[in-house]
Length: 217
Image 1 (cartoon, rainbow, N blue to C red):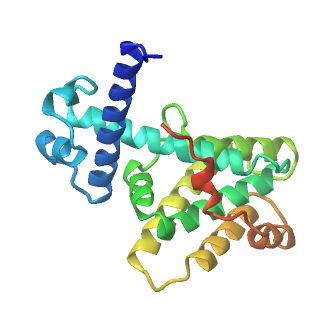
Image 2: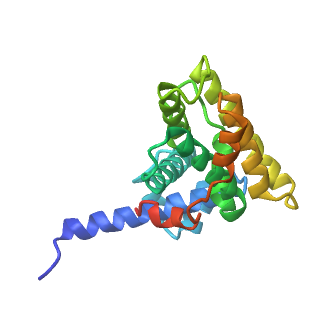
Image 3: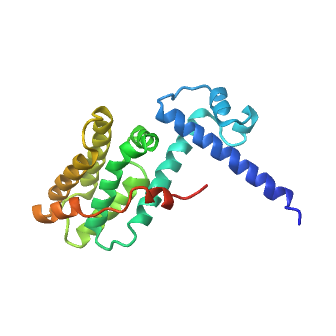
């Protein structure tokens, strides 16, 4: 049975878009934010005309690449922590997995650091999950912060600074540093030292499982 032409066309368009997004992620991770569109299309192995069938500009492509990376990573984190019904434990696990990401997936790490989460507009990806878990932990009486928005500012700042530190100091133990920051954040938000420590050293799912839970495009 012959496949309808429109199905083949849609698959080709999806492959072209995915190739452009993949190339854009690599350029962002390498800090090549002013690369010519021709260079991007060559890296993606697509024609220049195909680029404009999907994106208006290089900036539009880079924005889409960052947003999709954040969305996909956030979804993967959410799925891997789906069996946890304790919001403080979810918060801790997500922060600890993200801290370990910087060494294990440098490209995605640099994309996350490039984005420098904006907290003024709609939350997305990891930031959305963190705010959700902070609010849930407050409702459950675990976190005692007076202003969850300010708490999120501190968490986001700590996550970005930690990621940059781990890139700048490759000799530093990433797991140990991440767990210590996690414990400090949990204590800051109202957990006892004992509870914060337990959550900061609790067994983690295999970080490689994040790739299995990441949506395919």
